[in-house]
Length: 102
Image 1 (cartoon, rainbow, N blue to C red):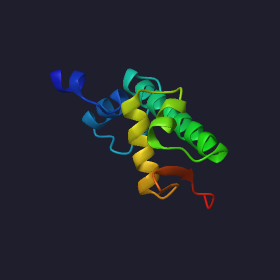
Image 2: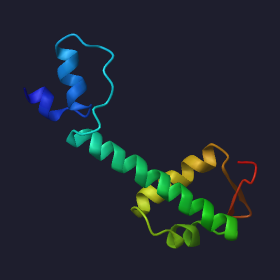
Image 3: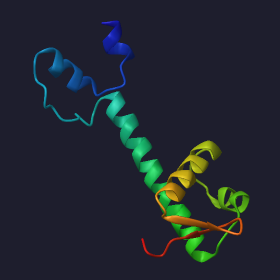
């Protein structure tokens, strides 16, 4: 019972797995699915805001993070790093810009 409460997977999936159902999808209504959906939506909104900001003009990291209105500073920087790693944004002369190939 404690394992069920402390888990981070979909609660419906966990119950179904317990009873032998291995291919159940996310229920989309339990507390954990709602949290996951909120985090994914917030992440997508932050990415869209970064893209919009960088398409307007290249910015240094401080100006870019300050121009964003969604999420914590830590989450913003995490997403910027991810976009840089996946080459969706570029860094040249300490200025970040959106890679227009994407």
